[in-house]
Image 1 (cartoon, one colour):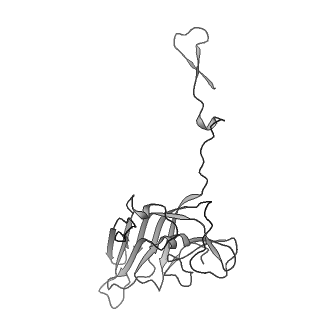
Image 2 (cartoon, helix red, strand yellow):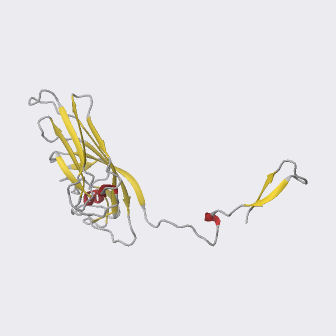
Image 3 (cartoon, helix red, strand yellow):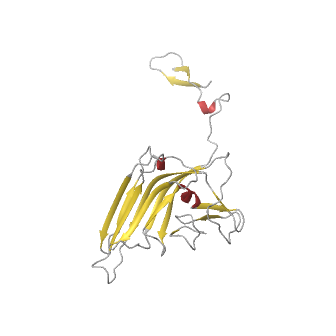
Length: 230
């Protein structure tokens, strides 16, 4: 036990009185502290929509886990993590000025679906519109704390959230920035899962970023802004 001394007013001798304190739990050799034996990390994924963007897309948990992966061989890739939960989604977009418009406009939206039985969605929806070429349309939304998206989920085809970005004529907007704040977690009891879409030309051992839909860079509707991408 550690001994600590404190001065006391009016005490005799050297003015110090011995007192004992409880040993810190982490310093007790007979009671080792509990440790978390899995990797968990928060991360913000960023994507930009491409020419194949349809204007609206339902992102699944499998898509989010395919968005950050490691190459096993030149043609095989595996998800880095086994579980993912969504913290927040943010969409920013600018309208496009052309002859079909009275002025450039953009509308963006996010939805955490709640009408799918057994998925415990919150049903939250939010949208924003902007007109002009100086201020982008901007929307940001968090899932309800007790909804499925806010809990750790494995790689499935269940809907995590829906993102939308269109112009004033409801045509798809390109170059839209989509930020997805997530928390990843893995488990030593689960074998690494292969990404849904096959890749080619990978460097074994290298970590890559994929598109928001889990497709390869050449075919995705929204590319990752990070490098390297595949």
